[in-house]
Image 1 (cartoon, helix red, strand yellow):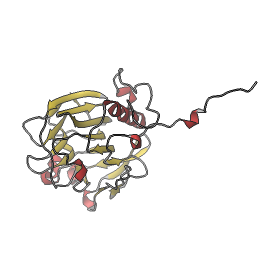
Image 2 (image 1 turned 90 degrees about the horizontal axis):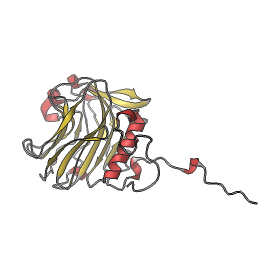
Image 3 (image 1 turned 135 degrees about the vertical axis):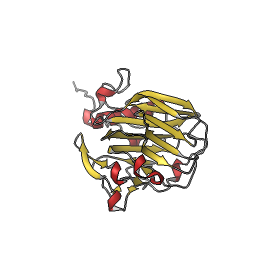
Length: 258
């Protein structure tokens, strides 16, 4: 009698953002790709983050054993993608994920910003210590989070738009939504950890561990997969809600996640 065995578990592959079906514009990944002058894009699109001025460069740090960046808001530390045309989506869909660990909380610290007057994108920590997302207007269609963030705590922040609705998610839970069909497109640089036009008063102070950006539509299943992947990677699974699909383990498998 011939014994029949299953394929060994080693054949299974943990899911990662490289398996996304949604457009992946840029992926700044913690670990060996991190540098204070250049944070290499792991998406394969060559959208590196850069800061050539030594006085504005962050420092390296670690989070859950992985190399990340630490930004000093008093020294105008920030990094830039350049124009990043793929994120100029007009009235269309997009998504942004960023893993943060604030070193301080002060009014209106920019996490991600692409500014040109009222035609802009801004994801920031507000004066009320909550996440806000602006898309092309500072008075209409603004998504304002309901959960306060604190220092020395790691958060998975998601800001995105789908079907003319702007959403914020925090640690795997929906934190805000607002109707928003504003058109967003400009030629300004896409900044991380600051707004170049606003100086140090708008700069984020603290750690940034990972960033994922996509100019296009992302499914709910893939949003959950990214959150599960990041929570496992940075040791924040306990912060996911009990109903989260990946509360008990990171996503596995290839291709589209449903």
